[in-house]
Image 1 (cartoon, rainbow, N blue to C red):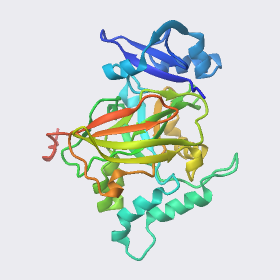
Image 2 (image 1 turned 90 degrees about the vertical axis):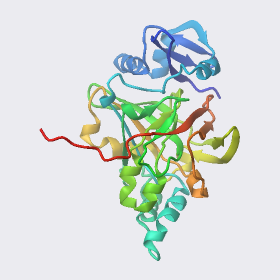
Image 3 (image 1 turned 135 degrees about the vertical axis):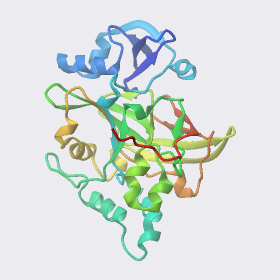
Image 4 (image 1 turned 120 degrees about the horizontal axis):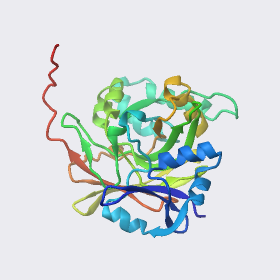
Length: 331
């Protein structure tokens, strides 16, 4: 089955364009960003795929070559970084509590951890009937558009970080309409990069561990997401595979429905500001840190999953500044 996809490309002269891919990738005429095209689709009362097809030109693009050239941008962005929110939910996947619970058990020997309790609540109530509200999931904030990293670009860990680890998952991409309605534009592959050592020290430091950059794949998969998505997460070091593991995602492999996760994010009025973009990470159950892997600068994270046709590859970098205290000046 062929899925329709949208991509964004920046050309060497700095101009931008949107690509619509089905069997082949065609340039979309008249728009420079996916956000612009989505706004037109909302105004016209059509799907994003229909809006793209209506503007599809005859010019085609080799996506693999564009990815290799570094011209493909994240699946979504915003010209005002403050109008793009990165956030997510954890403990959403079947089996996702195992690794998290092991991380925190040492601090709660003999008791059921908060992570396990929250996971079990999701198992019991994360898939409510249509029209009903289900269990509230874990929620975290990652940053704004400044923290969004393109395919191939480095995932830079702060100098003060204790770890830089991958989280292979899906991200839902949303545009808030003029009347405050959230519109899901599609889903993208993502690496929700986090500091698992900091989180392991104390679960109350989860918020600190999530304030990191995150990589977003180039392809925006349109329409209703497949229920069962299977991929591979890999870490390469010096050209060799250091660690590799399959991962499962999509609603069939989750303890929560997407609708329930979306409700508990967008129920806050502040998250329904017209014109804003939201990138919401849906969680994962597969982490190299759970297998004792310690990443280092130069490692390459590689995430692949059909029906996405392009991998998401990003090297790990370590910032060389910022470990000293920040000085605040009084006025």
